[in-house]
Image (cartoon, rainbow, N blue to C red; front, side, top):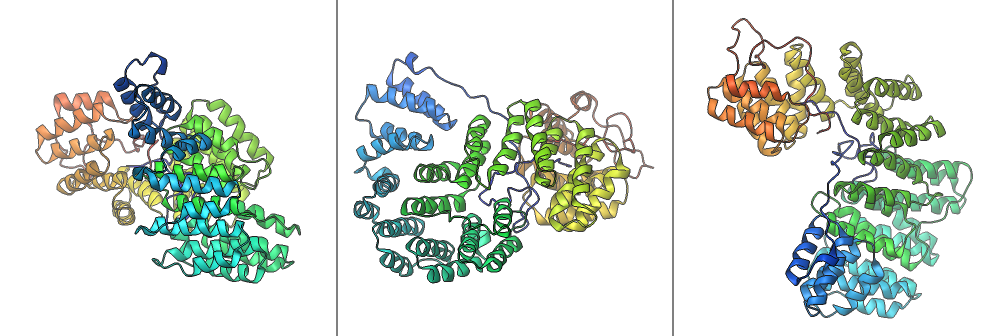
Length: 611
């Protein structure tokens, strides 16, 4: 299935992959934008029973509607004040909602509750650290359990308490003596460097930060922490008057993570002779950076609650941290809470080098809430303010794509290509890919195909491009062997991507290899259940191999599944009549129930989905 990438600028742990055209370990350039979710709300004042309050609170909790959940948990506690489970959930909801001080009050009340000790110790310890009660903080944060991640987290936090108490050498000795798995080093090197900076030991800071920056595994394990180390080292060298060394550190970061906007801003500042301040300047900010490091490294599908918890606590200690706010915004988008995400993006300080990133993502998110015209105006103003910033064109193009304004989308990417100039960099492949999609949607294949091929020239094994171009070639009955080879390479790169596996199955169908089509499309349905286009394709394939009852079942599934670009009338006709017999002289399989496939490509399936 061809998928037009819906673009999320900032949605993953690695702020490197947030910049659409930057890649880390062949990561995708964008995430699927979730549809805005209708949230069921309750009026707590109308709830008259404990069970009603509890069940309604849990529903709101699951929907991540924390304001409602908090009110309803409190209502439940009015009926049963001694209920530990309710109080535990109230504390967690408060923390997830960013109400640290109210969550702290519950944490103090639950300090002897073993079920939530993991949370209450961190909250109470960081409150003490925030209040500069460093000995108390260290006592509360003591950890002797078996969990590697918890041991690392508590040791780093305790070390920052030591730094706050003026015991820098003791803090660093504790971290150096910490035993654990190899991935600890990604975190310990950065924090040792940051602690040395805070205590004024520049030589030791330089040593640890250099080690962190040259750790090749760090980008994959904890990209956010890696980039913080790069920027801390660059700031250190700039402050010491070593301008070239500072720029060299930035070049190392660029080599690992291309087009990382904060690094670009830092480079510009240092090139002007400025000496930017360090991000971590005291114990509280250091402790906040621990939770940011751990939360960022954990940030993946299904872990949103735990990551949000760490980041919200980090935000309470360091409310101006731009990267924390942006990650929280990305998580809110994953949870289908665009209004909440917009608040996070808008909270990024105006003087932050990451402000423009937040403004770009804010524009894209405005479109998600239905404010398309406002989103367009916002993003166009960003282009006007800095026509050289390619990310602005990408964000604007995404909104135009969602609005199906492909003509303006193509014009926008034409301008972006002009800005890039005659010698594009590998990271610019996204511009040509998106421009190709725009022209393909305008049915101008003569302009679309060269852009897809240029994208592949810049990034030869990019699975999205391989999938889109390969599918298009097969569907147009052009260069079938080349198209099939491209799709197979895309599947090899992403064997668990249901949309790309669907492309392979549909390619086999178009080539009349129906048994192979069934095999791949059955797998695609398992990988991406509930997608109407895949169900439709599988139904067609079942019909061609004689499994007609199963074909009708799949077509019916297509009618009730998600997908806005299927031809519902055609599917209903297939349910009634089946597929027309194959033309023995045709070179590709007949898709429709009554007539052969037209030579021009059909509208791409489900344009708002992507691999």
